[in-house]
Length: 315
Ligand code: NAD
Ligand code: UDP
Image 1 (spheres, helix red, strand yellow):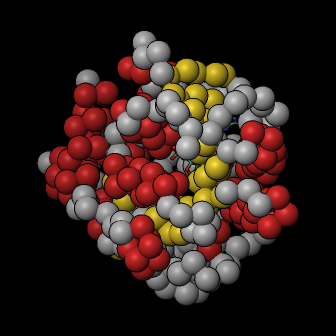
Image 2: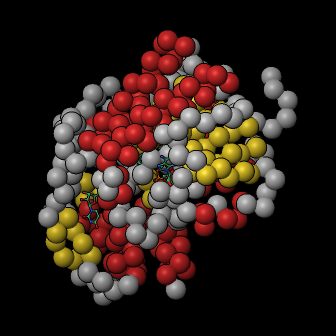
Image 3: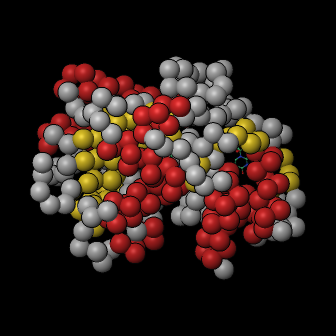
């Protein structure tokens, strides 16, 4: 048993999910080190934590080695929006793969427990629906999404090899579409795009015919899942799906957002991006049974809080 505060490293800590995770970890009395290169994250997301003596910010790119003394690592560094991860695809793969090697090396040296933010994208455009953790996926290895999908798949491989070869304590979460306050207005993901477009009265850009599905999880629910997985017994390495199984079409999401905002925006269609998965819904039986976790925030409630955030930001 260690005495005092746990020292917890969060890579990608200035991003959307990372900043919420830092909030929770600081609130629970940990000594938090946030590492970020600000590729998609911003200081605004963590500005409110900066005066806290138990929060420290380090500007660093995880593709380079890092030497610190910590007890736990949450490895979140990686752009998550298709628009951003495809902008510099080589850097995206490097962030996932070299980043994982560097963080796993650090974990091994200091005997830290390490968590990987993996993704539903490891399932690619899935033929199994809903997706269970034993499904091996259908990823196009040479398409525009591969830098992210294959990078994350390789990171999972590295985590399990370090676990087998070096007996590292690992936790791998496969995160499904998550939304909430602190998404960047120009993030490019569907929830932020639709809300910002509707608030500004601009056209709502529906890619394809909008019949593709996603299942959206509110950020607070997801972060609770992260903490439960990290605190679970060591046998529970994962991968564990974390997401909200409530599945809707992208068109339904657009209509909901327009109705909630009372916007005059209209739907316009744009070509469906290559390899865009047609359906996605997590099977969360494992998380329910082993972590006692399931999302509690319904879509409309989460959207209300996200709309309020963007309204304040844009005004
Ligand atoms: P985000 O883009 O808001 O955050 C990513 C953070 O990582 C940013 O702060 C960015 O500056 C930082 N970063 C990127 N490359 C880096 C590097 N080389 N070195 C240091 N920092 C770097 O995205 P997010 O939604 O908060 O996603 C966080 C993690 O969760 C990512 O690993 C993502 O793949 C994973 N994930 C998110 C979702 C989701 O729906 N939000 C779904 C699946 C997986
Ligand atoms: N999408 C859309 N309009 C937008 C942005 C996204 O119709 O302005 C669609 C996109 O084609 C995909 C879904 O919404 O089918 C989710 O996209 P996002 O980029 O949020 O995440 P993904 O799940 O594809 O990684």
